[in-house]
Length: 126
Length: 289
Image 1 (cartoon, chains in turn cyan, orange):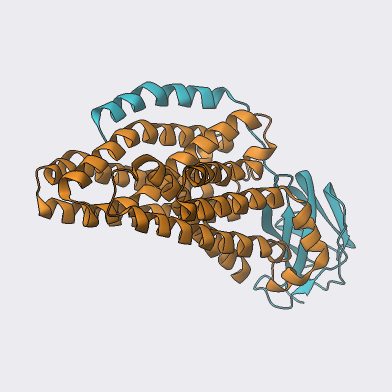
Image 2 (cartoon, each protein chain N blue to C red):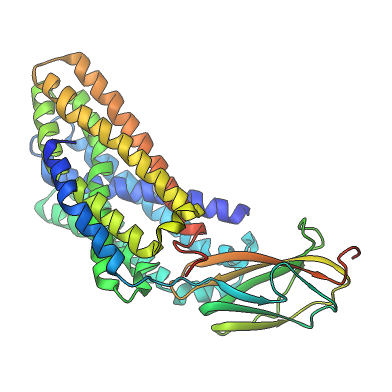
């Protein structure tokens, strides 16, 4: 914009950068772990799906499908409370690969979504 | 998902409308006495933007339950709507709508009281952003909120002033237009560094590590910074080349200035769309913290 603008940037940006790096990192809610774990292969179909987040969340949607999104099953019995670790009964699963899609509302009010996949048995059928 | 795309489009459009409304309110407060020939249309544009902003903010809010469900049917899910109602988003949207209503009615009123209402409205609209989202849950909430509000008021001044400047350059006599542009640029010279510094602070604090610049959130931030650099080049042209030429009565400079302002507008709309995307879909430090 002008010479004054450039001078202001030169004065304040280094201070802002230093200040920002001295501040403590602010954690955001994300999926820390899942059972079955992402990318894992389990010998038997899981009875439950366990999702562990970095902080208390409200799970608002959960679906399980084939990796290409076909045969999607919506899991409607979701807990109504906020929790960091959420256990949901899994539908009956046969051998094969599965994709789990989740949606949550974090403490900051943001809707977040994500997915993880796992394989039951050899993954060649189902 | 279609519900996410719809929500992002509504959010981006609501950003455009509310920053235009708040910016028109600020422009009228600062320059309306000089801008005889363009004052009325700037007020009208600000009012229309504020009313559009109310509709878009309400539409985006109504869609929150659908985003939670991952499908449009979620709009009719009472338990999800209750969850939205109890969230901090409700307070934020209420402040935003109240602020936009004050701007619309204040610009319409054309009185000293009306002008005060528009400025209170602009403050409410920008402050609403600090009531929900990443800054609201931070242990450094107050510091971050001040940085965010400063950043947003600067955007409102800059972006919201562009359409009035464009109209003013077409309707006012050239020396008068050049005079207003000079005053606008003088204020911008002080405001824009604040916008940039507040943006750097917020980003670095929320991202926590430079490694996150390679995440989708980080790449969108880098895209915003690149577009900001182009905007600065255009603003420099306006201040140092087109403005002085307009003051000398050069009509072709006014045309070049108008093209430059339209380019700035387009770039800021793209930046607001990128912001709507990154604040809707991504976490600043996902998955590292």
